[in-house]
Image (cartoon, rainbow, N blue to C red; front, side, top):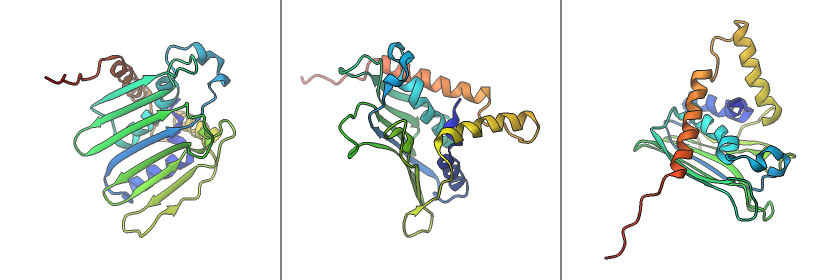
Length: 222
């Protein structure tokens, strides 16, 4: 459903980028170290594909909206010896050429207390930056408040952006509202039509293919 695009913090982020407050985007970091209760979704416990297909797909879709389609992806996704869920940890680099660095570090098995857990995006431009905390994923499903802070072009410090609503359910409402309004002729653009969704799914497939492929071998010492 690719609803993360409609989360309040992401709508505000996209608006800030569109207004040029960050300049040209050159860096996107997604960093997750948390404890996800996979047992809440019994069907996932035996699924052959979990982390990228069920979780990071939302981040990949959002990144595509902000940065467009990457040239390719380097990825590794794997499980954890303490459980049988197929994959719960992922590292990925999206190739946007020589100007933009885009990396995801995802660990759903950081079960050592809240103190050093994180669910954060850091987006840097040539003239400004943004920081986001995706609060829902922390202590899921109770969650914490979302956070969006922006260091705008020409600014002297970070500005906290007030957010109305939460990722759930507001992002789902936004997704369905756009579909209904487009069908009724009230919205000119259908955000993420089937053709666009296909590109996100192609990126997911490429990530799994990359994960299954061997890494570049390191030469042995002569």
